[in-house]
Image (cartoon, rainbow, N blue to C red; front, side, top):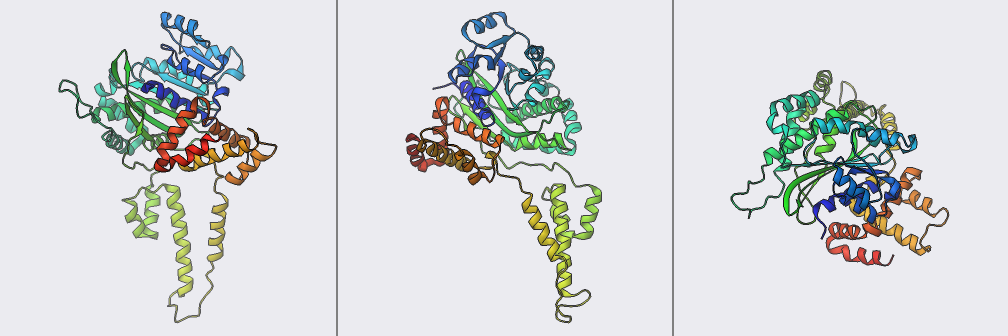
Amino acid sequence: METTKEQVIRLFLTFLSRYVPIGQAQLATLGGRGLEAKIWSELQVPSEHGWLIERNRERAENLIINHRYGTHNQLRTFDRILAGYGEDRAFIDAFHLDLCGTLCNTAIENFSPILPLVLKSTGRCLAITVADQRRNLVLEQWPNFRARAKRLFGAQASVLHEQIVAQQRCVPVRQDSPAFIKPFDSGKAAKREFGLLIELTELLRTQQLPWIPVAVERYIYVSRFRRRPFRMRTYLFRFGQQNSNSAELAFSEAWINSKMFFANDERFNEVKTPVAGITAQPITKGIQKTMEQQNPKLIDLSGYVAIPKGEYDQLLADSQQLSAIRSALAGVGGSANSRPAVQPPSAPSLQTHIQGKRSRQPRKLWEDLNDREQIEWQIKALELRAENGGKFPNGTWQKLLKEDFGHYNENLGRSLRSALARTSGGFRQMFESRIQKIFGDDAKTYLERLAQV
C-alpha cells in the first residue's frame, strides 16, 4: 500500500488534471529524495515538463543520476532559469512547495518569485506541505500574528480563527496512544493553520495577477520517514482568473469552506466539519439605516444571518417592488374592497427582472457537477467513445458537450478531456476507489460498466 505522502502527491496530480492534462502540464517541486519524480515517471510526464529543485549537493547528484527531469539548486533563482528558455516556457502549471518546516521568513523570500510563474499558467495549481512537529513562529508570537490578521481580515479575523479551531477539533485522535506521547492539540493546530493563512495571504496580496482560489483542499496526515512518524499538512489551491474588492476575505472564505481530509497510515477520509462562512462584503452603516427604514424585520434577521451586500441589495429591491404591487392591489389609502382592482404597475418590470436574472446565469462547467454527476458523465463518455472504436467521430464530442453542458468551447473541452484522462492509466485505481466511496452499495453497477470500456 502507498504511503500517505505518495497518496498526497498523486492527489495533487489528480487535482491538477482537472484543469490541464498531466502530459501537457509543466511541473516543479522541491526534489528531496526523488519520490515525486518517481511518480511523474510512472504517469509518463515528459522529461522536458518536470523540474526538481534541490540545494543539497548529494541529493541533487542522485536526482540527476536516477531521474530524467531538469534540476536546479536554488528556489529563489528558478524563475531566471525558466526565463532563459523563452517566454513560452516561463510558467509552472503546478508547483509543490514541500517544506521540511513551515512557510515563514527565508522560505517566503525564496518562494516569492515562483508565484507569478504559477498564477500566469493554465493550470494555476499550488500545493504547500508543512510540518506540524517543527518550530512554528505563530506559537511563539501569537499576539503579533493576531494583529496581522486583524489588519488583513478586519473584524472577521477572530471569527476566522474560531471557525478553524472548531474544524480542528473534528480531526480524529488516537485513543490508544501511550501516556508518554503528547496528544494532538487542536488549539495549537488551529494556530498553525491560521498562521499559514496569514503568511500566504500577505504573500499573495502583493501579486499583480488574480489570486483568489476557485478550489482548495486540505490534507492532514502522518508521514513516516525511516519509520519515524511526522504529522504533516498539505494544502492544494487552484487559483481563478478574477479578483475581488475584498480579496483577502474571499481567500479566507475559500479556505475555511474547503474540504478537509485525514489519514494515519491508511487512505484519506473526509473530516466532517461544522458549516463555516463569513460575510465577504459587510453591510455598511448607510445601507443598514436604509434597511431599518424599509423593512425593520429584515434588519432583525440580518443580525443572525450573514447576508452579502449584493444579495441584500437584491432582496431590498424585490421587497420594494412587492410592496408596490401590494399597495396597487389594495388601493393607496383604502382597502381592496372599497376601490376597483388596479393592474399592478410593477408586475411587468418584476417579471422582466426575473427573466433577465435567469438569462445572466453562468453556463454549466465541470466544477458545477456534484461527485455523482461527474462520475456518471465520465462513464457515459467512456461508453460513447468505446462504441465508436475508442474515439469521438467528427462533431460527436462537441455535440455531447452541448447536450450535457449547454455550450462548447476549448476551455470546457480541455477540462472534460482531463476528466476522462483521470479514469485510466495510473489514475484507474483511484477512479475505482472514488466510485466505491461515492456510490457505496450501488458502486458495483458502475464498476461493471467501467470494466466494459
